[in-house]
Length: 293
Image (cartoon, rainbow, N blue to C red; front, side, top):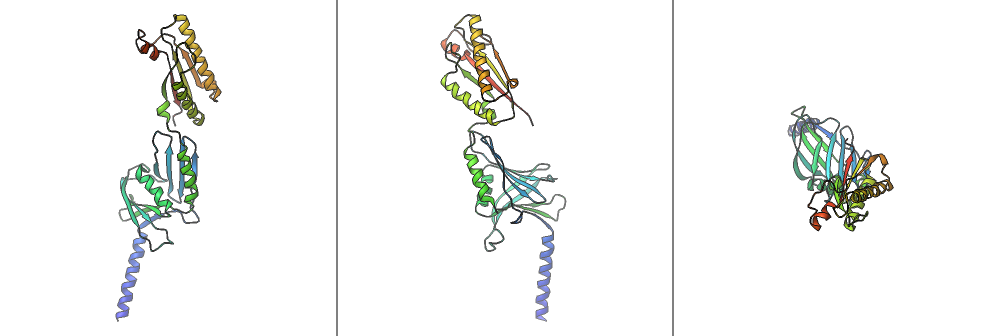
């Protein structure tokens, strides 16, 4: 009798466990499915992608900037239908059954958006993957109140691509489009060449353009001070514009994407009565335009 009761309880527990498991939706790559791919590896952007079968993909992205940055997106084939609170837990791989799960943080995924995480938490996900663990997201299914969704990132084959990703981040440019899209540079008196500080800045602009195929316009406007006559100032201003046109052509920018204009003494931004004012007026303004996707 006692044995039958024990067996009955065991069967009940087993059935309950099986039922509870059926209430969950689990997504994750098996060891044979696990892939990590570098989809972008340039001085402007580093991107590491992990496909998640039947769900979508996990994407780590770092962009050229003054500061080291990292964004993580859990891109879904079926966007979130409702905003959900999400638990992020670091799980041990199946072949380490004795290891415990570690709660990382709680986050929120918003309706009609992919899951996004930035900053330190994104770096922490990479750190857990490097340890061979499985960062796992869990939230209530928005279509059914009695189901939970679990999405795991696999650490299988992660390390080799992570090494490439880390090297890419180390080589990102320390400035982005917003930093150089509008730049004012200066000349020495009566010279068609930029001063040394401005030459360095121009080299940064050129480096960015070399890697960014989306730049579809470079607008160059040159201005002079009031040291010379109107005609001489205009001629010098146009010479400076031509020099910059040739410079941008030399780095491979098509001529139809370069617009230059010399304005001479027109449009001063400071008082030409003072040497400092003349220095400010003796300038070139470079504006970049890019394709909007």
